[in-house]
Length: 405
Image (cartoon, rainbow, N blue to C red; front, top):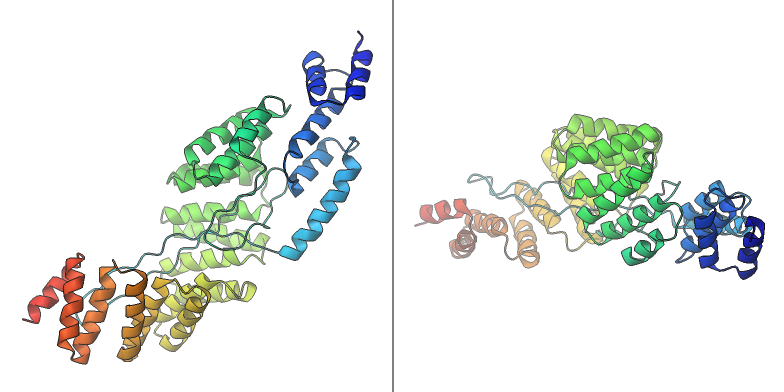
């Protein structure tokens, strides 16, 4: 049977396994591109089509059998994306620091570290349209890692299947496995920008920040106009305490995409960490302008206002933060600090009581409330709270209890 006869039979049967057999028999044949296009189309339609997958098909196979259908689908997906206008962001855990010396009572909790990772979907497009800020890592991908394992058996472009399986592992938090898959994809395609980007994410999540920086740097080398690569590299620098480099990268991200609130937010965080609170306030304000329902931006701006002694503004911001996120114990803690500075002890007691309700194992809030009670002259309540703080491991509480004897 000639190649033409074999291809005629493939077209007539129109079965996946026949297209696979043609590619195996004629890897450089007259109709290999058409067979590959058909296999790729069947792979990407295993689940719901994405913008990136439509674009990749159309770039690789502009005259393919399904090109017109995918052009229409791409138009519809872009219309839906413009309506959603969603951004992705991933918060770190909030840390509440303990109190310091007598009289000061407590120090503000540090600003919320909102990381703003932008996970990219394969292929082509750097998309910001991902699930909204909710504390989850919501990676869109088609199918499970088992699906992509099967895909590796028949998809001509194996790097795509390894990449998608890596995304599946990232979604499940199995970062070491994700790194292996992204590395395989890069071995097959050394210029695979999305594999570098997402491997960088996995490295950062496992604390390997230098490797993350190297991958984001490679992504930037491949696409110097990608704002999210600068953004994520800035976060990796922040994790290493290299705030000047972090600020530089976030500034570049803002230059490339001035409407992304998370870039302003993260640069503001770096400014906060370096004591430049006025610059931090300006960046948090811009983030709020772009995203008025961003609780962490209000929280961190409130923290900066606390640091500059603008307690009324701090209280207003913390109040907005807890309105948007009633479970943010750190915001109550910091608002309580502002109330202490204003001498409004009754309101401070209410806020620290709320922190204790949300985080009953936190000794610093018992200590702070106990010290407020002591200032108010309520020795009985002060003693009870300080004793609880001591029992939870607060060293200064033991000293205060000794002074009260």
